[in-house]
Length: 407
Image 1: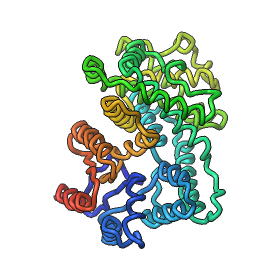
Image 2: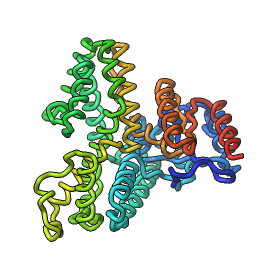
Image 3: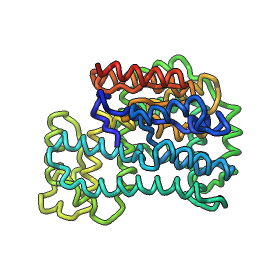
Image 4: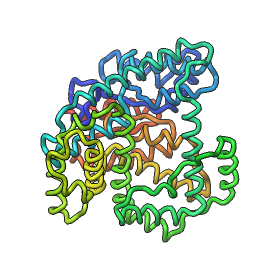
């Protein structure tokens, strides 16, 4: 796995992440994709030991949605060959969890009692992603089924929410700031999916709203720029709860993983230090014996920890929210709606915190990634450097530039 805490060092292969658009470009570049300019550079760098390509869960999700069966299989085969049938990134969600656990350790040393559950789920997930790519290659019927219907619905739902934001972006910005100011979790009525609607009804509403997309006013833009950092910090932490619940589904996993009384005590101290209310009254008044195998109190304490994390942010998720807001802002300025691909851009964007080189063919996405890569480099005092490239020439430059940084 790429180590996000280690800069590129002499003698180590640089970790390369390609977004899905690059794999499509590689496939279309030549009758044999291996002979294309970008592919040739990638393969040559891997043979020389100067670079290694990684793929993650988002590549699997996007590949399985390819409608043409032959192309779907070709994409999966291409990805497998470039990652040499073994290099799978555990992806956005596990990075968010890992960073949240790091935050807990900073708040309360020793609060993470056991990492075994996390390591197990992460390892199984990576194996599943790798196996899914292999099954896509083997499937010449198109019957291999990741939850394609739910993925299609998730993309449509995301586009509908963005479309609803687009008709009044100023209200959308005000609401995000209000959430942060009042230290509340996201209200369902503001961000809920279209329950009870068919995909056809969702698409129809998107088409209707497309005609009403409004431009971002100067006042709204100033308000957004003023509050952008704290919005992204808060919302990045709010994402932790649903991700934890989706990964740790077995009974008492979280009760075993954390030293709950230690975490509760640390959060109480943090409340005093920050003059903030982080814990519910029930948690604050609980005795040590009350915490034993008590899922309700465990979740309440973790919610308090998440509330504390809203002030500092979760790096990978913070990057994702920054990119989403920037892309939405650019769409609003054109009175246009973002494509469903924005849903996956969030996942791909997080890679810049964990890889040495990230390649995309989307120039707008690339510019937003460069902005965030510069932010990461500045925050890490130059320790973390990620080159954002869009073509073979830039990739070749990045390989040489990164090596020069080692000398």
